[in-house]
Length: 251
Image (cartoon, rainbow, N blue to C red; front, side, top):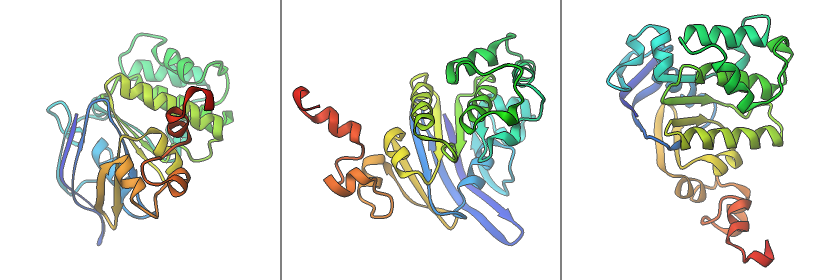
């Protein structure tokens, strides 16, 4: 659904992304991992088209998002940044949703319907800055999804979320993949990656240093192995997987 070839991002003399090739596939969740400064966010912004890209190509549905007007680019690739609230600038939740419907040429009420699916019961008159971290994330995700992009990029989406909010986000990501979208989650949260990702790409110093199925990359890495894998071995990543393997009477 997205093809990136030889993607390069520079900030002055600093090279943040060094000629990366990356393919995103329909219905798959890719986790992008690596230390701070490894190039994850720079890569996401370059793929979406809003950020700098000094070299390489990105293709989604036959077009390069970086060469399109912002509204058209959002219809191809949606991006939720590290601080989701940075995309919220109006006084009411209802205003944000109305603006998303208008900018995306969607039917009135489309964004609000998406928001109610992600986080039911948010007061339409509430100021977006007064929402919880999880509610703000849901609002920004609803705004981005109103444009119906086939590719969704989430940059550190679990930051500030409690356990219940993470569980709800994991369910949302699974739904997006089930709808056939390609989803990328850039995160340091190993346990969350174990729960949601099909594939893991690890970056270091602007390059991809590991790329493979989540079980292989997480289970085989001392740095990224979740707690279950550290106890039971690389074939087990989550408590849910262990529970599902038990006889019915032992669950």
